[in-house]
Length: 482
View 1 (cartoon, helix red, strand yellow):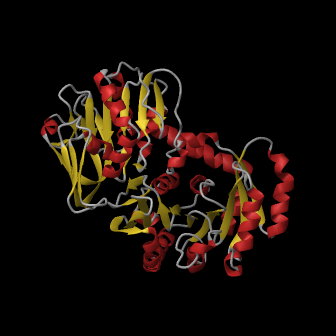
View 2 (cartoon, helix red, strand yellow):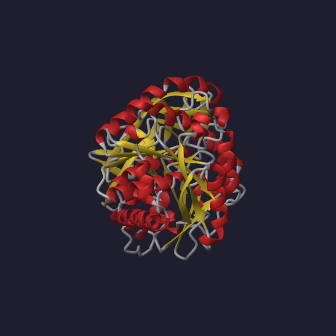
View 3 (cartoon, one colour):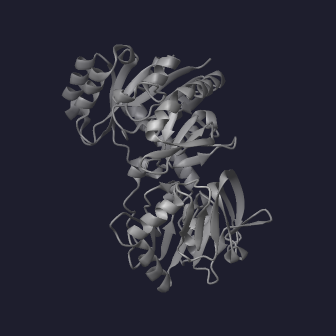
């Protein structure tokens, strides 16, 4: 059996996912067979695995850092929020239930067994498994039945390194306070700490670093300066969405829906020098000079239709369309562009129907079965090959399906309006394919740059590993694994 090490955070969004990705790439560079693992993730940004399931986007990136295809064992429990109080529960890549937060506590004890089984399979197949926690172990009110942090670490006997985020301030209190509230048995699992996201002269934190070590008795593994290259990697948390890319060129606006999902679809566009991407957030209007509006994926299509209207974006979209602007809906955004979204069985919430935006002559019916497939397609307008994936419930049909967005084998995919200015597709990840992305942008009169998105991600993972090697005791961290 291989060894394992777990990175937990002294708070949410401290950079655990990036730290694990960097450690995975660094371990791989040392000749180790390494795999990522996150017992429980909460995210609406998911990836379709090679074994036909779905896991958190961060674990897919970490798998890439390891040189592996993502599989469901890397993230056996995935929670996908659908409302403020409820989430879809995905176990081993498949949806098993939708529960309210207070009811999930009753379900958790049943999930430790599949979590440990997935972990054991990974350990049996690799030299090293690097585990990512969720949230913070300091949330001791959630310790009973925990499968994400100390509950898992104790059950699997995995040593823990605690990461703190200095960028938001209060990191000394984060670290010392975490130790103060932990049960002694849990605290004994923590073998060290590190500080993440430092800006400026690292030496200025020498006294603070020494204070944490003295107060906790934990071994310090270094202070990691802020890694600017993180913006070039797929993000999992909607908190990490950029405001915009600035610059000149094709003006693209994307609506930040309340349940926005799989928003890394935009990452390749954001890195194109000829594209100016603006993320339109609550309280903002769609800029009047926008060329293309993107309606992204959503975990709650009918709920986000109501949210979209509440922001007045339906009025903005119609004005944009009347000015001759173009609109692209992806997955949930595609469903919103149609005439109706029907949910007769109440899969997304209360049973019923919601009127769509009416910009495509299609209707969607929500169904219990979920499409989870990797897709090779060909763009109808340019003939360019596309690679993507589908991850959605619902079936969409109507007159505009006679003008498909793409072809998947002999089957039409997506829909286009008669004038071609409104388009919808279920294909996530379409812009990763360099040839298609360039052809798509050229249709707007934009000369795309020489960007090879896949190469950029691989090179950035190498840079991340080198950055961690330069500033942290990576060999010491890996030596903790058992």
